[in-house]
Length: 486
Image 1: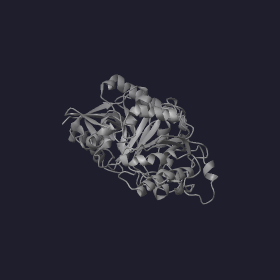
Image 2: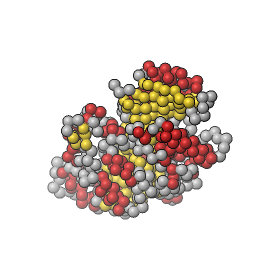
Image 3: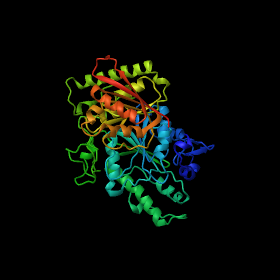
Image 4: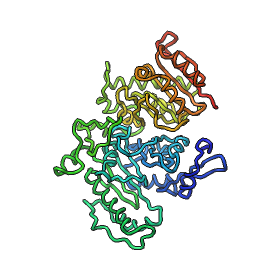
């Protein structure tokens, strides 16, 4: 990564010794592939996880992953070679812009924090959620943050929690951590008093181990099964249905959420201290292995609230075919494989057909699918296909750093959103997040094209208005724009 793109040295100073990042000469950063948890490299760490739980087959049953507290996203970067797409998230903190580093590397990432509101991802989105020293107290406030993890974790999915000791004062925890097992509950009187505590009082270490025991108690209440613990890595599995929840004793905390709670409702929705119910019909749990799941209409397609004049499966298949033909024509006629496409944003993704076509055409790019709040919530379908996405209101700023995407795709976006806000507001936000030299393709109705072309020229873009494959008399046009360097 070019130093001038992310001119921050604090991370190198703080984390260089843990093999996160280093300077290469004066003008570049280098990412050796290590991390606090996997100082010997992410590949070795991934192999260890697969050996611990053989059912964790990366690129087969495990396709979509969430990495919490991701650092510079080496975990997600190395999973890409295993046909896994990882959403790497981290808050803004003292280490400058970790997410900006990740995006500069060409790895999917977003600035996000477990705080007071639901994250902008649907229920049962991720096949595996990973937390390696992510500095989150999962058990605080009756476990409300781990309940949010539970909401986003697919039925039968895995939660991997790693807490490798890095600092000298943590070594006294090793014996206590090894004592954790899959027994029913651990109580404070099982915690041995520590000796030779260095830089930390015995009381503080006792509190730390209490958190570990509280974690086991909480996951037991969530009906998670501790599948394997090895060293400082523990892996739990979420149940496939509600049977365990319903068999708990009355008054057990945390309770099940009300039946009318929609776990896919995430826009400005507060966290809830309850267990999101799994669909009784098994929707979300029955996804095909990768890569077959990309083109198979998922079960949750039936639960999306849309106005459809044809069968939903036919609509899904038709959209996939439509975008595959369009992207194929872009590759052939507009030489897309010569473009430096890596970070792609689809601003109105529907079922994710455009992103699927990018994969089918073997373009070396990843797509973040955005589902606007002004339309139906299709995010569950997008994730069930093995893609990633997020909900957003395009009348508000998008939560990413400037100049982080190489290509922006907007199909039918402006003709809908102009009823809610000024089109120039959206275009200016697009300019902010688009890299110099990046490209924009806007496919929309004729009645918005003149204004969009004027806005593009005013921002210094080079716009070109093109006919669609339907010809010059079609009601749609394509506005292609190049953002100039400097």
